[in-house]
Image (tube, one colour):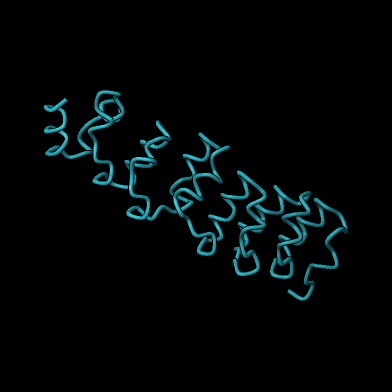
Length: 168
């Protein structure tokens, strides 16, 4: 183990395989804080316990960077958001979409009225969540253009007609 520890002090973390780093004989000897963020995310996908071995605030993770991890572990999304100290008030519109895709209840934790969704993002929301009142009630439907409003009407009928700005 001493040889491995000495080896790990002088080696570039990107030059060794993930399998070597995650080996039970090696993992306790690794300083994960010296790794690049992308490699940490890749290692977390392979072994979620890595997150307990890093200084979270050193990496400043973003939701977009963690999307592939969330796909592997969708039931850990909320736990990881809290553990990685991701500020839900600083999310981009794309990051909001990512979070609600994995857990629609995130919509209650996000100030949706301060998020500016673009046309594509509104279309995504309409196509995937037109039937989810929890999400639809949070959206400012007056900001949608005619094309997206038309899609909403096609999918949900007249249900939201009074909330759509027809002057756009």
